[in-house]
Length: 275
Length: 177
Image 1 (cartoon, rainbow over the protein chains, first blue to last red):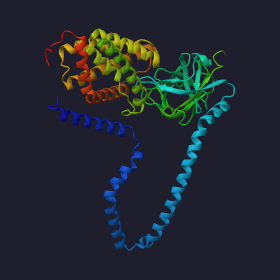
Image 2 (cartoon, chains in turn blue, cyan):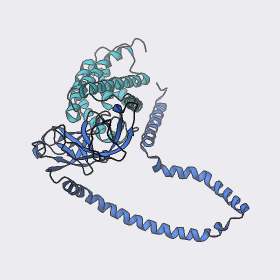
Image 3 (cartoon, each protein chain N blue to C red):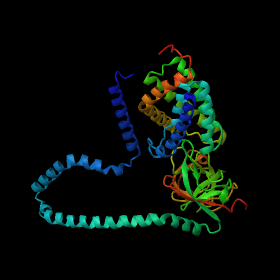
Image 4 (spheres, chains in turn brown, red):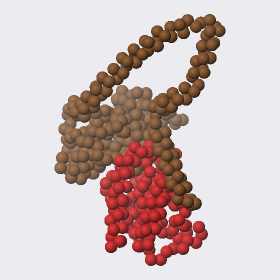
């Protein structure tokens, strides 16, 4: 297609650069590109400052600028203090991350003392855009069986669908084919929450009883029906209630308690299958 | 001997693609959407080696992927096998020497593969059809695959021509393009 080799290589390099830019921009939180904001505002802001200064001079309210020097020195000392604080914060972050995993296990044990559980790490995530399964590093040798519930510090993760000797495949609650029988913790009304393609932290709550009161920020937990998940495990909170013309069809979006994009450690409940 | 080396090369490439897909491309995404390198790989096999090898490799690789991470066994195998099979029919009508036709073939194969996989999910698991979200993901994924095919085209073409000489005794003369 290209007329010569050189043009072809340039074309490939340009495509790689475009791809990297697209990937970075599409995954970046707008707030994180404040440096770009700095660059753009540095073009406009000096002129804007000058104009404001002139305006204040003309209006006669320029007393603020007399204190500019003292403010500058104060700013410098504050910057110094800030960098010292940032240093100590970094040290604390290291200590915090070292303790994080152990803390999660302790929290989980405290939260659900009635369940025997095995800790596990996530070793692989799904390679498909339409399914959301994970692989954990415990298997048959560790006593893991299909249909065992998997939880994390914040709440429900999913259930084991298959096991090998050393690994287990877990179908998460955000997978579009997962439906969990749940209850609204305040009104105790039963609903069904299912995974969606749309987001990795949103579930769709359906089959909401017509007379049920459902409000944003209501907690959702497992109902214990269905034979897979035990009762009372936290799923998430109601984020948005969507009312339709027919109240039977109304639905709600549930924000999962577990942040699946950052999930690294889980617990497999081992004693609920026999119950 | 050369054929054995090629076969080993194909298996190694499959594992490299698997690790790229499950590690690198889980964060190197466009708006959270991953590309599908397996489709490109199986299409390449079908185009340059032949439909039988494409079909067999597609089925084996697909089943292997299903065993590793899938919820049910077989569907990836069927769809990847279909891509491998389609490749040679496409080869009869379009030239592999054109970057544009390779890009189009990859886009169409990605669309066929993902529609098949999603339709299977809808039937097998009775999931709610989210047509707009599905189309959005499908569009981004196809675009991602096309961009990768632009980058990988020299490798695709060079290695393809190399293996084609080993496996295909008769070269297909393209009719139209």
